[in-house]
Each structure stands twice: as C-alpha cells, then as structure tokens.
Length: 157
Image (cartoon, rainbow, N blue to C red; front, side, top):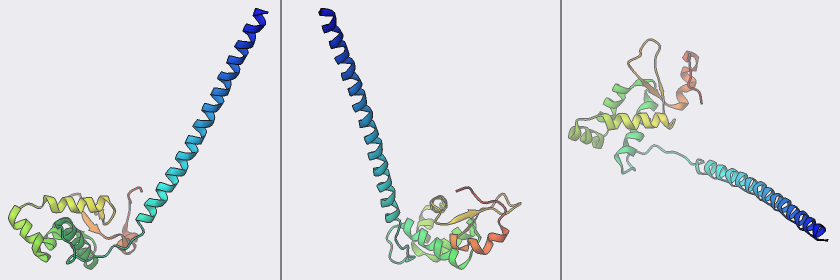
C-alpha cells in the first residue's frame, strides 16, 4: 500500500510540475505578444510625431543653433551644391547674431558642428565631388533630383 501511495504522490508532483511549465510557457507567449503590440504602437506614435510641417523662419527663432539651421536651409535653397567654407562665410554675412558670435569667439567649429549634425539627421545632404577629396559640398534633399544623373555612389540607407 505504501508503494502505491508514494507512486501517486510522485505522479501528482509530475503533473503539477508539467502544468506549471505549461503555465510559464503560456505566460511567456502572452508577454511576447504584449511586447510586440506595444512596439507596434510606439512605432505608430513616432510616425505621427513626424507628421508636421517644418517652416523656415529665422526671424522667429530664439536660439543661435536654430538661427544657423534656418539660415543654412535658406542659403541652400538659393544655391545648391555649395562647399562648407562658402556656406559658413555666407552664414556669417547674412545674420547679425551669427556674425556677433563669430566676432566674439573667432571660431567656426560650432557652425561646422551644426552643419554636420544637420547632415547626420538628413535635413541636408553632404556630397564629395570625384577627385576633390578636400572639400565637402551640401545640398537639400529636394535638390537631389537636379543632380541625380551625376551621382555615382550614394550612401546606404
């Protein structure tokens, strides 16, 4: 009798452990599904956040960085494929606040940083001309169609 009692308790323990394993597996599956739906909703929110107009109004902005970014786009609209040096010179010439900053610091590294950051965020594109390894040229994304026939190699997206 004791043998059958022990075997029943062992069978009960095995059944309980297998049912616990099944519950854990079900819990993991539901967590994965929940996470997938949460990620999907997050992506949709990000897309909705990007659905806004971007307007060039350098006279309305307060910060120096915003003034620089607005002026860069303004300059590039008038003159596509301009090199970095000319673009910085035009920035300094067009805006008094940027000119005051340059006179005060005698440094263009912040202006270069803003340009490179804009290129990194794909607000503007940068390009190099074949054979000219020294200079970097900038243009707007909508101007890509104008120079598309001359492009040999494009960056991977």
